[in-house]
Structures are given as structure tokens and as C-alpha cells.
Amino acid sequence: MEALKKFFPHAFKANDVKALIISLIIYVIIDVVCGFVIGLLAKIPLIGIIFSILGTLVGLYALVGIILSILVFVKVIK
Picture 1 (spheres, rainbow, N blue to C red):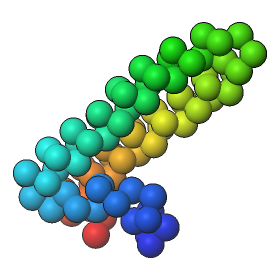
Picture 2 (picture 1 turned 60 degrees about the vertical axis):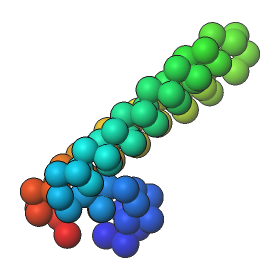
Picture 3 (picture 1 turned 30 degrees about the horizontal axis):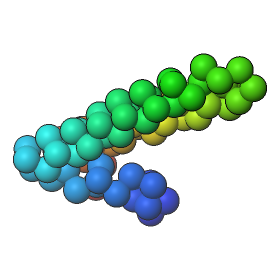
């Protein structure tokens, strides 16, 4: 659990509605901004595959952060 707290620090701060909304907004902004930048870089022929994989990993990071935020809010995870 300590490893998750190091990788997803904002997710474990979602104890009330305000903190949950802030956490969700942070993860959505991370996903949108990185997705846009990586989407542009993925069109480069030589390194496009690497950026495509990186974009997938950033999307998974944001998804797991959102799920953890919700689970902390409903007190399934402490």
C-alpha cells in the first residue's frame, strides 16, 4: 500500500467531496494534456511506436489514479 501512495499521492487525499473532485480533475488534466502531446509526437515515423506505448501507460496511470481516488472516497481503501 505504501508503494501505491508514492505513485498516486493525490488519490489518497480524496477524503471528502472537494478533495475527490480536485483529485479527479488533476488526473483528467494529466491524461488530456499528456495524451495531446504524446498524440502529436506519436505521428513521428521513427519514434512513434515508443510514444504510442508511453501514451498508453499515461492513460493507464490516470485511470488507476481515478479508480483509487473513488475507492479512497468510499472508504474501501485507507
